[in-house]
Image (cartoon, rainbow, N blue to C red; front, top):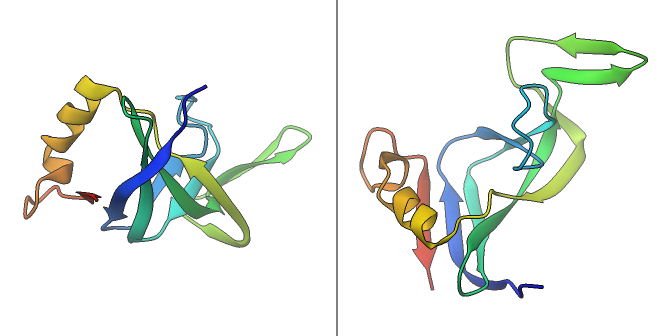
Length: 117
């Protein structure tokens, strides 16, 4: 089993929603609303991921018995706090992420600031 260690931070620059299970690509996957701020960047020497803390998103949520509620805006549920990982990035995927506009300092599309200690 890989041993992930803290190697830096990923600063999220704008409020975003993330699936709490990054492997689940279903459009009805449970999401969390993550506020801007720094989150720990982890690596096992090969792969990278970061850990986020956020509130479950109540904009579209299964309420049980086949009932769902939906709304047009993200609605963080204050007392439902979760900690969860980003997707896991292998070496090539990590390099692709670092060179993507979402990570390029000063780019209009920048959403993340990555610092490796």
